[in-house]
Length: 77
Image (cartoon, rainbow, N blue to C red; front, top):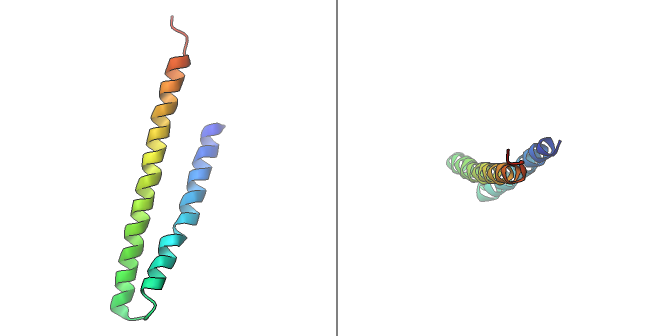
């Protein structure tokens, strides 16, 4: 049950967090010039990619930490 909650929380952070770089790119592109729109979209994609990388790293690190804790608590036979 905890793993499903973690995944739901991570997805919620991703969904909410994707609007931050989007609004940042809109602020950057405020002039509504086509070339600036393209640059703004690239900025958005790069920032969103960095965010997804951070979330992926968190998920991998927490998974390894959880696996180590389970292994530590597993009875030795």
